[in-house]
Length: 300
Image (cartoon, rainbow, N blue to C red; front, top):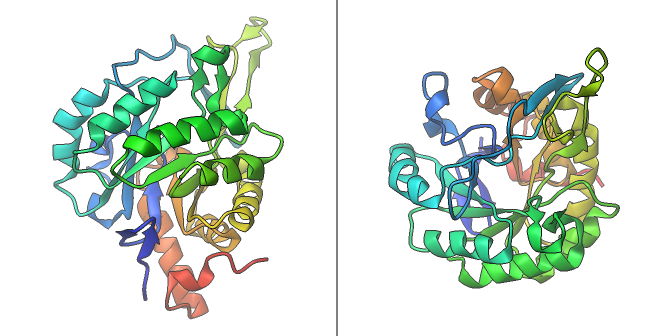
């Protein structure tokens, strides 16, 4: 049984990755899973300087998922290089760094700093608010998405995966824009905007009023968008959004994803990534599939 997949020239031993923002650097999960079995660890967003994140409350549960407005809290790229890369390199897994910024120059600064470091892939989080454009996310306008992708690609030394926001009217327009700007791959979807109100206090539960909805509730939307993007571009696609089981992962792969990322499921169950991998293996055995590549995008 062949599980290895190729993302922009980087071979992963299997298609199971972690979703940024849900796994940290993996330290908290080491007692529960074997990180050596993961295809790739996608770390929490890394900025040029430390970010404090948003004030609490910043996470709330909802039916079929959760809403977060953590605000990409992170200790910055220097800490990541000094502490997290050496720790992760103990394990036989690929490292993908999710990079964040509030301006194009901030994104570029992170990619430049990582250019000589021992990481395998970069994931460009274009759901960040563009402070020079009134806080509108880079990823909701094709022109802005292309501009930041192009700028980062010029300095990146690792393949550049662009993570798309689903909060747009036409996901294929954004996908084509970042492909044209030099992206080496696309990951999707990021969280959908959502909110909850405490009816007894008559106020929003989250301090920022709204946040990103993730979990099983968004999976049908994610599958649809992965299929659309896989049809629209020639780049490898990494699918995510509500993956809880191996069967969920296979659904994304059939829709066109070369690899998948497990996110919210890991917050509920620290063994989720291993169970998803085992589920993929079980499906392949039961259906007589020898090579995972034979399943990618076969549903038209």
